[in-house]
Length: 320
Image (tube, rainbow, N blue to C red):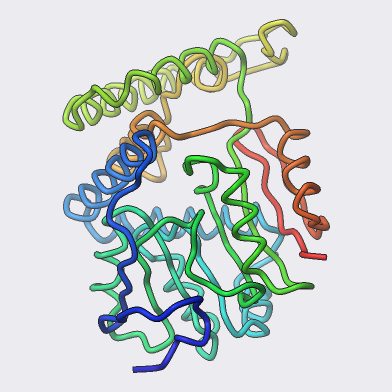
């Protein structure tokens, strides 16, 4: 087994390709969030057939290029091959970490997650020599200062107890002159924000079974609305942060009132998982563009690429 100890602040046991630092968070909301993601990924992994899993993987890869400014896999592979150590902060089931490892076989890729999904990742990819997994809190990593060549925190930062603290930690471990890729959820219209915020205050008392039922019901609502193929003209309502223009009815309700995700190409099971992903975790903070950029500048990061869309703000940022 390769010796990785030179990367870390202290010694600990590495069991094949897995390090377990922490199993639980001391923060109630973070622990609930960890459990929600454990439930999400383990249930999805057990119940969804491989072809449908591949559809999600392909969707996520294409979105990754869009979020972080890579034209295609070849360009991304060239970028990764210049990095000795790549850190996937919040790796979940590890399929993106495995993708990085495939694209850059001479790099060491480390995936870290607070949910039990990382245990599945370590077992599934235990034959990969350049892939290591850690179970623990990405806001308190075991790495030395300025030791990582590329940090990825994709669709995760806003699910941590204190995203600002988490970003500061991820910048700490990044080498000067190297890049971090991260994104945050964008603030939606006020009615949607109010519903989401209220629900997350009560979600800790709701059973996973009931959350899956709700996710299924929201998926069905999204499918029904989408199949209506109704387009409406909406006026600007600035006080409610509702943007005017032509909308598909499903998209109008989705962006402004309640998340009822539906994607025909991804399929029913993946759409249910996306809806569960949104409403199950307690921690899911949203940001305006200015708030996200303030986090970036507060950490002395320089913008290399910036992307904005209705769902999120994202980019690659260089440590100065």
